Length: 266
Image 1 (cartoon, helix red, strand yellow):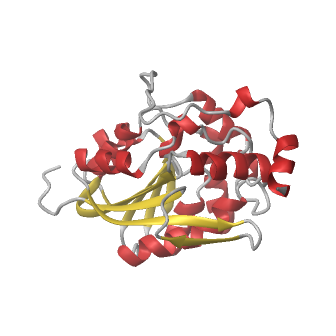
Image 2 (tube, helix red, strand yellow):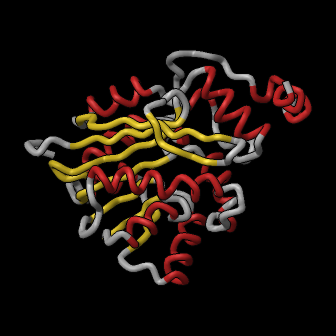
Image 3 (tube, rainbow, N blue to C red):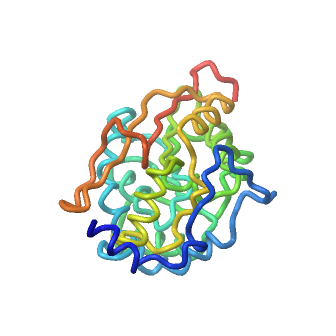
């Protein structure tokens, strides 16, 4: 009752946030980048490494997702690509685990923040480039042992294109890791209403319901790209204890671990 009483005062007019619950949202743009999304994260770039800022959730979940993927495929000594790296939170952490990391993004300001942090923190073996995943895939096919794409697919018009690019970029036998948000009424309540309007964990407008991706859809994209699904995990949050943990519940935030067959030709 208290939650919904507070929610009534916290939310804007319903027309600003109420989604249309559709099973197959259609993206109309032909470019696989949303300028509004780039501007959104660029405006916040200077706070990317502030652990008490809007990026606090990323800092809190980073050890969990890194331990999970490192348990499946140890990154030490591997050439790793982080697609949609933003300010470099995951890329930096993987480099500190002994990986040779390249982080790529199309947002200039977050990339500059990532580069500055690496310089100030003296993080070894990490570089950043402003290039799309698709362009890099044409440039360096099968160029990486591991590819990560975390909290990024729900921000692009065509997530299947990103999945295909990641599959092209990884070597046969290599691993590709994704994380995103499910699309259902629960995820709308938790990831948008709860996280953005009630708990203020994220800036309002961070996520759009229509861009969220159901696990079955992401699995289909992976199969079409020639990736085998190896593991699926959910990410949960307790607003009272302010603790995150990984579980088998993929109803809101979830992660995929996929692998490119060793006999793949591309």
